[in-house]
Image (tube, rainbow, N blue to C red):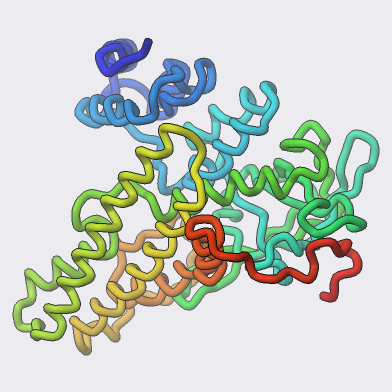
Length: 393
């Protein structure tokens, strides 16, 4: 049985064999994965030891104290939070061995090819087609709002493989090589001036059947694992007190007393308390994950995350007065990660508008909470038994 003492012993052995000060960063990360200390709750041989998820904090604390490098989790968040748990649950042994190690070390960045111009909130209406040709699938279509596609080597992709059945039933899940011929990544410039998102055009892209994840036609079921983990990754991230968007607002309040008013004080107190409640609720949600896969509770956390970010960033702009109207740089960039706290108040205000869209719109998540958490009746669906090809588009 792996307990905290055993994990400390294994971590000490790793540090002794690979001193962080003299070991190449990537070599250290590979050794950590091979020692089962990457994500301890994963199986042995796949970066883990089959230990309780809660014991990961023991390893992380020991490594941080020793000055060991991390795998830049913000840069590879889609791989860690969405692709990895889906591959672990539905992948073949060969797929797990091939993809999980370079995913965790950050050698291979992942992106998510789900949303389409005509299939955003209604994701199951997607029209990207995958047609079987021998041992390959030939994929044609367009995806949109694809974070990190410009730096990604791999993508998790859902495509329609059977248009003659209802929309949820005719989808299959694939792992797509972003360097293959026919994959065209184009930047989408946002209101912030940056282009962290992309649109991706797929033209006769050939994907071997060996890169199919799950059974043919089971793509919607596989995608639910990805989407549930995505919402937890966004809304349930681990933060210290005053971490995230509330931190810059509180810092400005303390350092700039001349900006304070009674009304702003009351609003800040309210949002500070809500941020702390959200942080502690996220911690409880992570503890619930120890017992199994994430459920619809992640939708509620993601809802709270979006609303708080937008209210806090609006309060910060108002608190700063004329300064809040300034913007540091409109230069077109294609960043590798989103840095909410490293830019100015204007950036945070504009970027937070996307929080209620990405990872599932707030309107869709409200439906999920209503139906799957509160048990309210589902909205009527007229397309439930209609073949996808017969739907109006």
